[in-house]
Image (cartoon, rainbow, N blue to C red; front, side):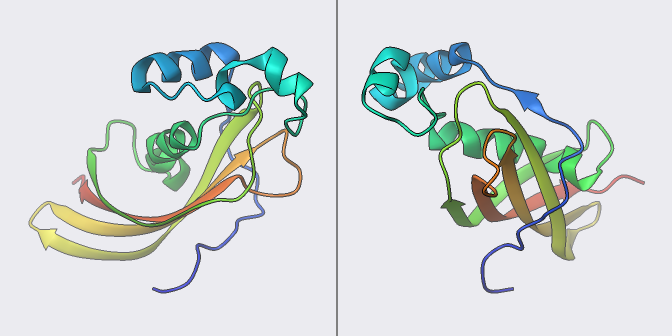
Amino acid sequence: MSGPPALSTAPPLLWRETSQADADAFRDLTGDDQWIHVDPDRAAREGVPGGGTVLPGAFLLSVLVAELGRALGYPPGTRSWQRSYETVRFLRPAPVGGRLGATAREVARRTARPGRCLVVVDAVLHCDRVPEGPVLTGRFTSLLEETP
């Protein structure tokens, strides 16, 4: 199970819209007030790729983790707990206003105890405004409650 996550070329099934309000709310929640995330005028003036603000990396990681179950096709309401982030790679900036979508695949699964298993997942976050490829990849381990 070594090496980087496989980079999926399949488009995500579901997309999440983003806005400047998302970046601003993230700033309010975390204190991450870097101008490249929250000052559209300065971002345009100082040549940020795409001409505007970009989403914070921690925001992107949070979206990817939140979308894992859906990307893997788990039933809605499946309970899981993140156990580890083995690798996380921020590959490209994701412009505010882009749509984010995740693809993922299980690479390993083993029983942890009755009714729960550990699942290792390679996941990729895409942004529809970044045609060069994924914006984030990662390998994650989750404790998953198995459904009967």
